[in-house]
Image 1 (tube, one colour):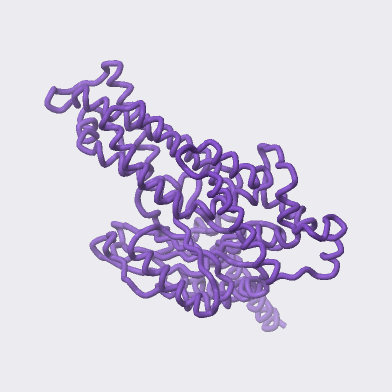
Image 2: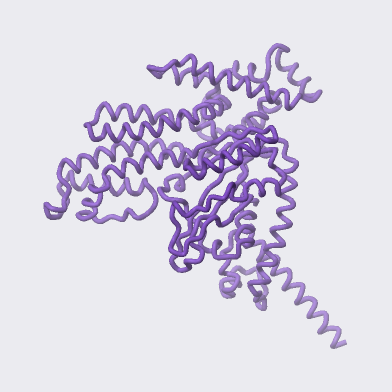
Length: 493
């Protein structure tokens, strides 16, 4: 009897250990528990979910995490396999510059899938997280290994979604340009189309950094007489510090020798740049802190930038006009590349529709506004016609459509003819389309695909980085498979 009791206790203890191990793996995979806690038993037991005797080895935890990952991946893969819409991709390059562990210094690729599910909720799921360059002396912009596609196509084939990809968002550099062309060729071989999307946050950041570069020598002087930290990699913080310094100068509250203190002309240059960037910061705040940041909101915010730059150019001295001219060139290039995407997305916002596009061009001088409006309208109709062919209505959908609309009018015609909605603080375009899908079945499919396209790789404070976003130090120290597993599963919750 005593032996049986002891045996039962051992079985119970083993079951408890296995249950605790699975709980710990799920916390790591789904709730972002720091990996180092797995060997810090005091911190681990402070959670209150484990037995006092639970002290797993890291290898045990790693094995269990990989099992959780594989199980969740099968579920996620099934969802993507059954998804009947298009999927957009984003490629973000994160950087690790750990001085404590040089072996993990390098650049890391994060490939994410963006789509709107059947409940009209926007999803961003990481499909691949991998190291693409390692530099013991620290990463640099020239350190990226130029593989043909960094394993992206292999990842898409593994997930079974290579025929569902419609757009690819990444930063604008030569290496990424080569990547896009390679991926585009492979997708077109299967009769697919790939839209290249340029990151809006990066475009604004480059504009701002270009302005800072033009006063770099003066900023160095400013730092000699006014102590502030500009090492944080966010441009809005550097702007804020410079604004404080300018205010101190204007109140004569600056101490230093004449050899170090910027001259009045130099202070004026800093002040002028700050005024320009203050306006850009207001546009950025309104855009990147939008509650529901989908493509439809970009046009109505970005169209203010050329107006701001034009006004500053007229009101400024020659130095600031040069700053503005260079910024305008960068914006115009982005606008030319991205206008059609932003305009179609805006037209799919029931608060804007084509009426906003028409209004926008009615205010623009020296451009053929009517032809631009016609281009947008023609592109929307062409795209809609493709959806009509690809997704014919079922019998009941045809019944509903004919009951609500005349035979001669399509979803698109009826939608555009309806008055625009009044704006409201908590308006959510995805929630509106979820309900409107019954009335506009084909157009809602088109909206679901288009509104999932990421126009920026970041939002909120991350949109203000002037350097590559940092990779998580705790994750990149792990083995590559475990690192990838944790990055992916945490995004699938």
